[in-house]
Image (cartoon, rainbow, N blue to C red; front, side, top):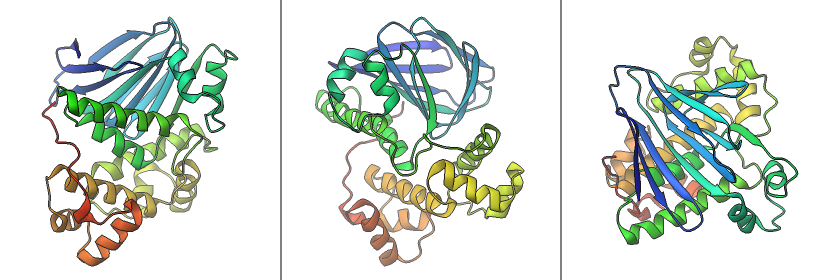
Length: 298
C-alpha cells in the first residue's frame, strides 16, 4: 500500500494489485485556499479517474476541462503534464485506476464489446487517448463502494480487487444505458446538464421540479428534458429515481440505516412499494442487501 500527500489538504492513498493500481483521494473539507495537484503521465499506462463528489478543473495540453460528480476521464497521453485545481472551501472525492496497456490488452483480448477508442489504443492504431464523459448512477455507486471499502485488510483486499475489475468492465465495454459517451448535445449545454446532475445528486431530498432546474441553468424545461435524455440516456425522472434507490441501497448495505429509514430518506412512505421497486431494480429485497463493505474515515 502506498501513501502520498499531494498537498497538505489533499490526501491520496494507493493500493497496488498484480495488474493495476487504484487510488482514492479527498480534498479535506474546509480547505481555506486553492489547491493544485500536478501530474506527468508515464509511458504505457491508461489512467482512469472518476469524480465521486464535488468538482475540480483540469488543465491539460491544449485543453481545459471540468470534472463534476458522476464524470470519468480515460487518458493515455505519455509525457503530458496536467494540473488539477480544487477551489477553496470545497469538498471533493474521487478514485483513479492505472493499468499498463499490455495488461489491458490481455484483459480485453478479442472481445467484440470493447470501446472502439480503447481497441484502437491497445492495437497501436492511436498513440493517445483523452476521453471524458458522464457515467450511469450504478457505475458511480460501484466506485463509491470501492472508495469506502476497507483497504488495509488482506481479505478485504480480494474483494476490493474484484470490485475494481467489475468497475473496469463497466468502463471498457460499449456504452451502457444512462451513459453520455455518444452524446450529440452541444458542449455549452453539456456543462449545464452536468450542473443539473450535480444539483440532483447533491440533495436527493430536494425534489426540485423540471421548471426549477431549468431556471437554474437557463434552459427551457422542454430543452432540458430532451437534452438530458439524449446526453444521459435517461429521463430526469428515471435518473432521480435510480439515484435515490442507489443511495438507499448504500445506506442499507453500510448499516447506516435500516430498511424503513432508508425508504423514508428517499421519499417512499410505503415500505411495500419501496421493496417492490428495489427488487425490480437490484434483483433482491432491501432486507436481503448484505453489508459488503464498512465505510472508513478516509
